Amino acid sequence: MLGRAFRIQNRTAIYNRAHRITASLLIGLTGVAFLAVCHQLYKAKTEYLPEIRRRGKERLESALALRQSEAELVEQQQSEHKNQDSNTKNNQHEEENGLSASNDDVTFDYPDVKYEYLDNTADMQIHAWGNSIEESFEQVS
Image (tube, rainbow, N blue to C red):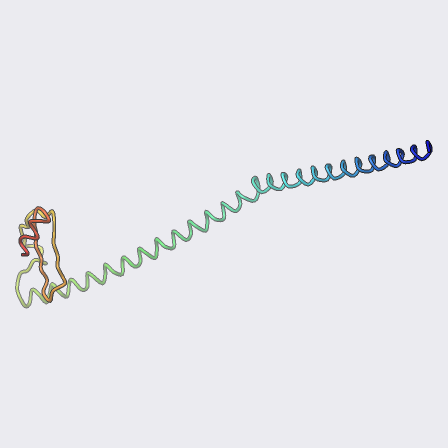
């Protein structure tokens, strides 16, 4: 009986030792894996992210420069088109009606405009000027 008790205790001690060794191994491997992940994060922060940011910044700057040049080109084309249209209209108005508001030598005195009321719902356009919304409505009605 005493021998049996010693054998059981001995086995228990062996099992306990195996569990401790296994637990220590698992804790050690977990620590090594954690350190590897931390190293990769540090490497990404110091090496990869600055490179990614630099490439992204270059792409953004090139895209903005391209958009700016396209916008300038479109604006230039529109201004050329407007100039051509206004020149032909000015010539037509001068030939038909003489001097007009589009000519440089004609000036008009407009009242100080604070509020403007436009009603395009009817067949004809109703247009009123006034110092307040109420005043412009009164002119219309």
